[in-house]
Length: 85
Image (cartoon, rainbow, N blue to C red; front, side):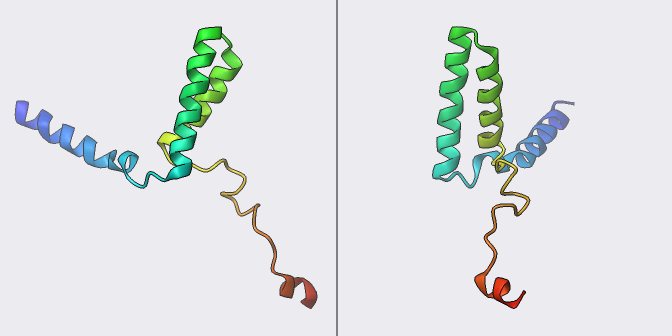
């Protein structure tokens, strides 16, 4: 029975391995910003900023973009395409 637990634990760690890879500068900045906001929100009991801090924490831990640029909304159209129209 104990061996089965260890196998499940290893599988869990392999599934969540992506959390520990591909850390870049922006991801670290989001993590630090999230931790500062969460700590300040808890100290001052400001629940709106706690939600904002948890959102930044989610972005940093799971390496998710803000949502607007992920859908291609931040793309700049090519000038050659504009001339053809």
